[in-house]
Image (cartoon, rainbow, N blue to C red):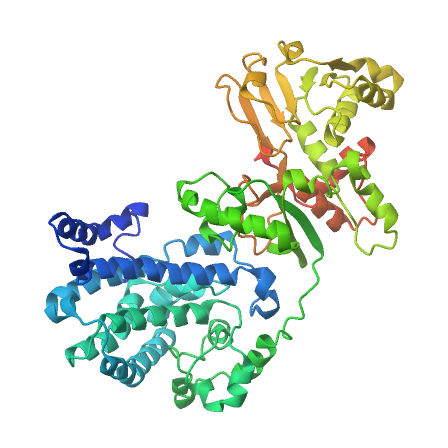
Length: 600
């Protein structure tokens, strides 16, 4: 594709530095402002308008992308049921290249046609002229060019195939095309605006209105969610030839020889390229009856960690969610709004679907409880002290048709298999928790001495009594961090401060199962990641990272639920961890293709 002329972007290797191309426009605005140009006069600064348009156009695409990922609103009206995976996200990463191109073309047009630099705010005649030019010139021109890109093998292979390489159309797919295609699209956009201005009817409102409406309709056609009510076409049948729908354009992506129009199906009807199923499929999907809302085979119930990490979701920023969570500077302006939304969700919201993927034809969904971790502990199945680790719940509801799985058996297995075989002593914090208890009992059976940090002697003796008599001496209660000054293997199940970390000797490795992870305070020590496993390679439609995990990696408790589902086990995994099942669950995970992150 890249060997053909105008198939690649001149700045495709610039990375973020491509935005330096906006520098001359920014420089012109700053220069005029520093030279005393009044704010009212700045309104006529065409470079300022081009920058504002760039921001607004980018916002249109981002907002449409956010909507298309709001599964809690639109999953019944999704057209293609596949998920947008990491490969497609990376393919569309530079979707905004066309905005740079058209800003540069717009600036050149302002120099070639000086009258564009001083347009009035409004002119109704310009709107009429632009509409005539759009219907009479832009629509048929785009239809003809688009059809040529499909019918001519060279044009499709070297140019248009990039746009169709995205399996699931999305708002960013609208911008994902080669340089030649966007040059054609620039001409299509420019004809109504420039034509009306040459006639003397141009206006700033026309430029903003036409360009933003153009982007809005392009995003609508690619959003993969049917939003146009079928009743509209039933009441006004002619409208179906004047405006396309997301279903209409999605058929073009599944059947590439039909539905070539820009926005008006009229030209497909005239060209005999109208897909015969366009209206019937649209009616089924817009009524919500087309997909019947498939019941998930597996649900991972997650909760919010803190305010900033709650923005690590696809319907906030798809690109941000596709990378492991890190605190980013651009999150700061959104923090107050996110806090307000979070507070509102605490009061009114219920559990909702946030992401999904498919594994061996099984639908896996992630549902979010709109509460932070400390609040979820009051109701969540993992809090053994309050609800028996979910046991009280399943005992009360004995006719449950779903299996409740805390997944901590695999979490314990992951942590235990990260500990080198030669280690003969460990220091364990959070020792009386569900995971801490299981880890301690497992290690003592392996004749590993476990220094258990606990202030409750009764709880310690309770755990000690669960160990076989010959191994009880390997469990040692300590009450202060100083007791572990000689131990270089720390298993952290309770958040510890930098001061508490300072008691660890040089060269200590911190294994951890605490969320959020502890701060990497010691440079002379090493810190393990949270217990996690990589999903099997045949996972489909996965396009978001789970908190700080790498792509394709999930928390071990999530992986534990996946293994439970794949194995078809019918028991609930609740209450205290069965130490005797740790190795069994570990072997089952490996059998199904899940891999420990540490082995990669």
